[in-house]
Length: 203
Length: 203
DNA sequence: TCTTCCATGTAACGCGTTACATGATTTT
DNA sequence: AAAATCATGTAACGCGTTACATGGAAGA
Image (cartoon, rainbow over all chains, first blue to last red; front, side):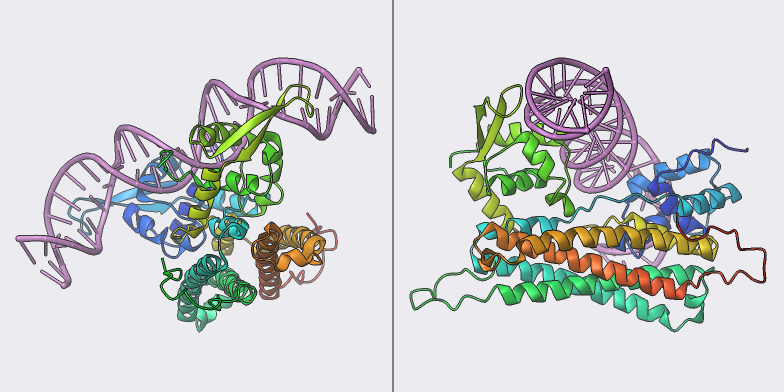
């Protein structure tokens, strides 16, 4: 009844989701969109500032100016009741299947064109990336797991625990997959001789 | 030495990866970029046709005209030796960590703002999508698993089996995660009475 | 007769990345 | 003295999606 009611973009809803937890400056939001929201959705500050303007124009957020934090006055954004309603409606709305975009797997699709040791190098690199990611998620999950509020479905920590658990399981599955692939890609037993100078190993 | 040697885009390399397996028309490529390459990388025909022109200009693919297949003459594309070299070089090149973009998890991040039964509905929907995906991958994997060439690292089927195995494991992890979430989101025990007509179950 | 499949392209638009631009405070 | 952090914005460019455009053959 009040505003235009057009559902904001996914980015807009990501921002609303952060502001529903607590008020933030644009700079804060940009940092949080790397960690921890960046574990499943990323955005740069160059996207965030214009989006905040749009959300404000739609009446979903508002801001006041806090002079303290930075050198110049910062804008501290907060979600409005209309914004909260838009967020709820978005969470409950129909979810369509989403296209996947996974460069690592795309490369593996063509891994048959390279020598087995090069293939092994690629898999080892993917394994390293996934292990690093897994460690990050597990550390963060450990930091909140003790908190009993992770069991309260109406508390933000509940949702944080769910998403971190999902990220962990996904990364762990990827790590196991990489190890499975390495079993199928035996390290070169260097034939007979004449191969010691190769340089085939690392990049 | 021959051409400009600028690495083609990811889309270009995806196309080269398909053409390295066998010659195809643009239409064929568009279909394959839905299934099975679409399981980890998607592209529409409106992207593919211009990209084929760019690849041809760079000398990485060439085409001949086959009058048979369609109503108008079709262009049958094939990879050139330079294209094969570019593909090999891309597969072996340094792989950086890639941003994830997962709308389902983004929604779950804000799931604490909705009522538990709405949250359950979202998780059930995600579960359904992942189960469907898992069934697709497993069917396709079963279709090639018997073939001994899936064990030959220089055969395309080897790479197909790797990627399908990864997609399966990822989907299975997601299914198990959804089931884990459902345990934490008990179905509403409907208080006392007056709830028999709910319809809370299916979508 | 209508829809689907084969087959190829172009145009408009939106989202996301990279780079440009400025500048004070705090840490190294 | 230099670099990183806090803090906010704009501009250019590229990739991806949706829609526009055409049209013959085969099946429902």
